[in-house]
Image (cartoon, rainbow over all chains, first blue to last red; front, side, top):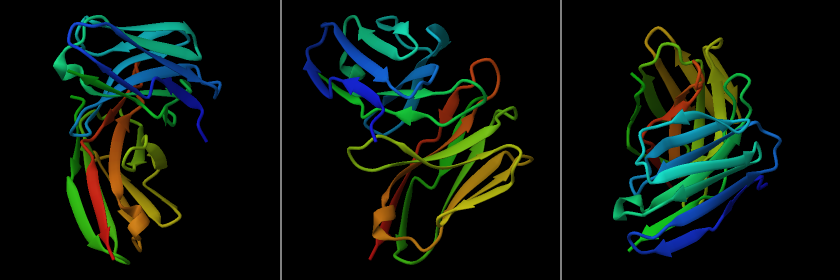
Length: 113
Length: 113
């Protein structure tokens, strides 16, 4: 069952372009995340939001900026993509109260040429 | 520290035998330890988890053990089947203000008929 929706599924772009990824969850969770999964399958947290408030902001380049309009939506903008940004970006959601299961979206695969 | 070490990186077993994956963590405040299975082209999905108030949990051919003193936890898959072939990730976290989960580097399990 798909309850964390990401768009687009794939995006191919050139160095220096701006891209935006969207994520919506219908699980009623109050916390959302962006993870980056590289070619070696390493899963690294980038950001987390709880009720629209930024909670985690890992050391990522400043060209990455998350945007949350409400607790069900968390988008990711990359201002000027670099080749090393090529990866799968996974959105996830969970409940904040006590550590809880992360539900991942299908991911957005970004290829930077 | 926040590292989670996961071993082995690749595990090949014969169908019907058991498979074990081990993880260690650094943050003694971690209180939540989930295991995720990721099949090719799919998103990671939770298969089993354990919290710090337990030492052992079992469900449907999966056993997780937690040794808080040694900061070590493990996943044991009994009677492996070809459908168990996938990437497996351990994670530790859930503590502190951020409650973020730190993932291990993953284990590729190959079950050979």
